[in-house]
Amino acid sequence: MDFKLTEEQLMIQQAARDFAQNELLPEVIERDDAQRFPKEEVKKMGELGFLGMMVDSKYGGSGLDTLSYVLVMEELSKVDASCSVIVSVNNSLVCWGLETFGTEEQKQKYLTRLTTGESIGAFCLSEPEAGSDATSQKTTAIDKGDHYVLNGTKNWITNGSSADIYLVIAQTDIEKGHKGINALIVEKGAEGFEIGPKENKLGIRGSDTHSLIFNDVKVPKENRIGEDGFGFKFAMKTLSGGRIGIAAQALGIAAGAYELALKYSKQRKAFGTEIANHQAIAFKLADMHTSIEAARMLVYKAAMDKDNHENYDLSGAMAKLYASKVAMDVAVEAVQIHGGNGFVKDYHVERLMRDAKITQIYEGTSEIQKIVISRSILRD
Ligand code: CAA
Ligand code: FAD
Image (cartoon, rainbow, N blue to C red; front, side, top):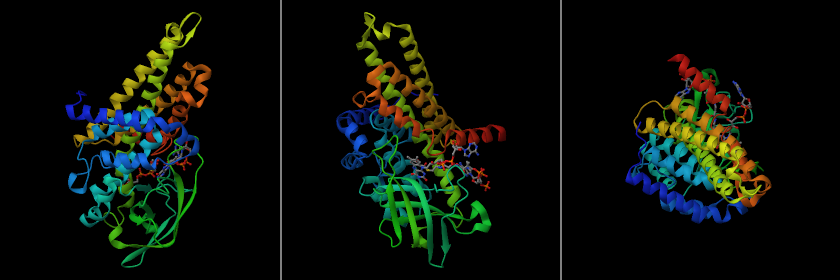
């Protein structure tokens, strides 16, 4: 494995680092406090090409590889994981799903708006009774000839109120189980489509998470993605790539927390010396650095598998499982190294610790990643 980054990748990494420091850092604490969606920042990310990174330039995308996308996710997440989850959902769930499986008409109509930031996308799989158990879809999309009628509730939807293009997974034929599920494109403003209140969350508080309610929403047949019954496979295939993005988010959170802890440990003095000179702190830093490097290898490897058109279901799941654990462990230690200062908002590490937790929950919990990994190794 050669992880030597190309000139282009290094430039993109630097652009994301500069953007995170100059545009995201200044108000990140206020956004977190107020649960404010980073509207202006998202607009700027659209201008920088961060919202359609892997999409072909003919649809307004940046035409970059997955590794470049991962580098951007890592840099943004070091500073603001609320912003990076918006980037992750838009890029790897919505844009990738549409570009890979959508019709030319769907791509012209929707993808071109999503890559520039003119529109934001949401991916709607989870329901009150279908989270990890994603095949148990209760939302229905009944076939009425030239359209579907959508009824049901989705919950936990990222970009819930800020999006205007929603990819909604729903059951058309219950007899066929997961083979009777479809993926539909639903536009904001469709009659009968209601957005529930915003969730008040532990972390990624700048990102808006909502329930969505569908009451007899008419969705034209041309808005179905793929063949009839392809919806569950669509969701699974899309999530396989999405998990690489969340793994990169976790890696970034860990790296951000580590960098702050390293700096602080070289400045703060106790017992007549910098705390980094106490072996207990130095060893924490050694463990943090080592686990971050290991996570980085897994995340980059998964991205390269995708770029090399190799199977990335397993490598993506392993990257997410491991990087999310590292994010949580490292962020907790970063708070510890900061002592009392770690417990207050000004030092950023408490936010990174709160943000880290979600990476073990969404896009498949850690337990679900272990199901994916164990099934894969036992099958092969
Ligand atoms: N690619 C293609 N097909 C796949 C697949 C993949 N990666 N994984 C599963 N499938 C297919 C299977 O082959 C099977 O089809 P066949 O019967 O034709 O072979 C079908 O899907 C059902 O699979 P399983 O029999 O394995 O189903 P299961 O019920 O045992 O569980 C699961 C599957 C992996 C646990 C799945 O339900 C799952 O991934 N759950 C977690 C859901 C999740 O990740 N949600 C995330 C929501 S989005 C989000 O969270 C965004 C965000 O926060 C920002
Ligand atoms: P459950 O499935 O009820 O799981 C509860 C616990 O049981 C977990 O620890 C789980 O790992 C464990 N468990 C369940 N089944 C098993 C099993 N078979 N073996 C072992 N352990 C098991 N979803 C979307 O569709 N789109 C989004 O944009 C989106 N964004 C989100 C944003 C946030 C902030 C949050 C919190 C969630 C988001 N989700 C989204 C939903 C997320 O994907 C689900 O919360 C997640 O998949 C878990 O589902 P659940 O919450 O129903 O937990």
